[in-house]
Length: 105
Image (cartoon, rainbow, N blue to C red):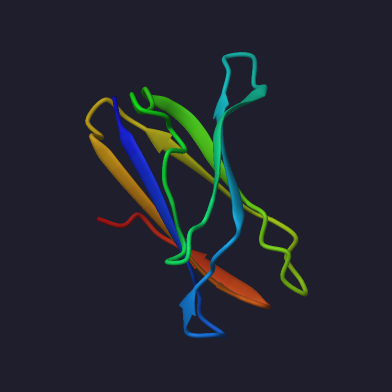
């Protein structure tokens, strides 16, 4: 099983993005998305527990960040989990009119 974490930083304010809802969805074989977990970023901009206590299995997933910036309502990050992945950290750097995401350590 793979552990998953995320961290949202507000680059315009120069600090964490607290209070942001984040949901994790997994893609089924028929292409439908199923909600796996959800959390709200804490005071440090971190959301934990998205994949539950046991983690996630190999497959395709997406994180849905409810950003509600002046321009972006949501940021959706779709990614693949392989059998070799033991831990994934996916940070989001957010500003009112742009964002960046990467595979962290």
